[in-house]
Picture (cartoon, rainbow, N blue to C red):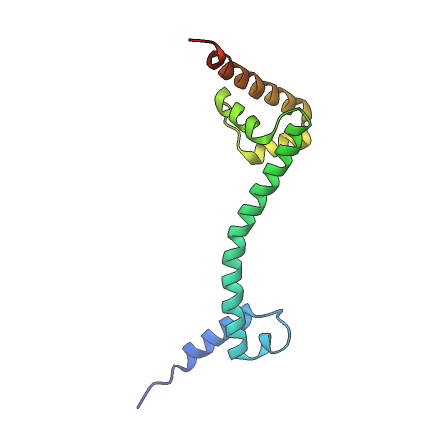
Amino acid sequence: MRTRMGAAKKRKKKRILKAARGYRGGRSKLYRVAKQSVRRSRRFSWVGRRQKKRDFRRLWITRINAATRSRGMNYSRFMGGLKAAGIELNRKMLAEIALNDPESFDKIAEMSHEALEGDLEPANTPA
């Protein structure tokens, strides 16, 4: 007598249909359509988690750029100055400081500017 995977198949179908709850029409009721929809949604969720990281980084850079331009600098020079000054703040924290604590950001921008000035002076002197 052959086996018919009754219980296992039922669990599998139940798991897929549970994942498809909230979908419209047959996507949440019919197994075959639900299976396709769930597979597609999982693929998009994987991609979306990576896009979210990109989007947030872009947002932080935009905020930092706006804050540095209002202080007479551009983003790339500001970040280069931070590196020269040895300040290791990530973009998320810099964006938060720029948004919520402008006085502190002024100090950071000044330190970045001074580090750039310090780097440029020896290079301009004749050897």
